[in-house]
Amino acid sequence: MVTFRLATVMALGSVFWALGWTPFAWAYNVFVLAVAVWELLSIAHVRKSLRCERHVSEVMEISAKSQVEILITNPTNLPLVVSVKDELPLDFHWDAPVRKPGQILPMLFAQLPALSQIKLAYSVTPMRRGEFKFGDVHMKLSTLVGFVWLPVRFQLQQRVKVLPNLVQARKYALLMRKMKMHEEGFRPLTLKGSGTEFASLRDYLPDDDPRWIDWNATARRAKLVSKEFELERGQNIFAVLDAGRVMATKLDGLTKLDHAVNGVAFILYIARNLDDKIGLMTFSDKISQWLPPRKGIQHWDAILQALRQVEPKLVESDYAGAFTRLLQNLPRRSLLLIFTDLVDPDTSEALITHARLLSEKHLVFVIALSDYELRSLMIEPIEDPSDIYKRASAIAVLNDRLKAIAQLRESKITVIDTSPEALFNTLFEHYLLAKRRL
Image (cartoon, rainbow, N blue to C red):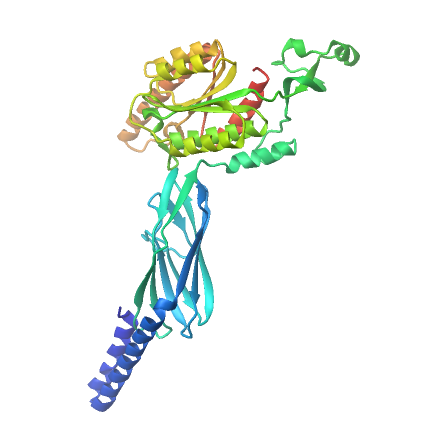
């Protein structure tokens, strides 16, 4: 409760003792102690009158910043100096205007004038999905004199939910409503496909179905011309989320499952905005969640709830059981988006075998997040013998992965092998192209 400032000021009194000015020394020390006692009693008198509130959103999104505000009210006539420490969940990263090295919890400093209210703020970034709890707010109170301080604690426990990240999904949905994609880094696309309602004519492309050729327009223009149709709505878009061992690896501070959950939320949000029916299955050694393709806000909320709860399990995934359920319970042809990871042909044999069976009835896309850290080992300079071993291991792992991908592609299954940074853009483009094939 005693500050370094008081100790320093008291030490200055030793000058009077050294000079033999004993009366002045006693008077000086008594005065300093009297001021310290006055400060202590003043703080003790007013601290129960202080009010504190924490304002934070009850719903956050993983890896997205949210603002936390601490509102402090001083209804007394005593100006104060406050330092504030907030108890935030362990899996939250935080940032503030001033942060000392090694500081674990947010510590904010401010002057609190008499009869006033101040607002302190910092930002948090959740790194896990689920439900979390903010704890109490702790303060140290002093005056402008700064000889002593007293603690005060405000019980402000508060629960928040962390959902998948939909920031990019909202951005794409907004761009779709404008019917163009001019955002930097996005490839321009129009929302047209091979539905039933005629939209326009355009030049024939190599991957177009010959049935789309408009022969009358072709004759007039002396070049192949294709018909374009508005994208069909009400199609089945079904996400299959592997939550087994292979998805527990971390990339950029998040597990591969976290990145996949963000991808699932993104593409189902887009599909929902295009009036498609969306569904979800999560599984590891057994099926955890099954939500058949439907529409509606309640169904979307149920999907978000399922995605919030899913966590990786250190078990081998049962692809046979999960994919058999898909064959039995999805009678209508659907776009199946399987979010998993590919290791090598042997480890991924069950996935490859049963994905082939699914592709006979459904349009199957396998989405695998590539490990950029392994790829970086391929180009980093070799500085010592251990680097040679690391590079050789990386080459072996990547080659095995490429073999598994090749086996799926030989079976006419689309494999999206992408990084977390490119996941949303890649998913969006493949989704629009896939709707033309359903």
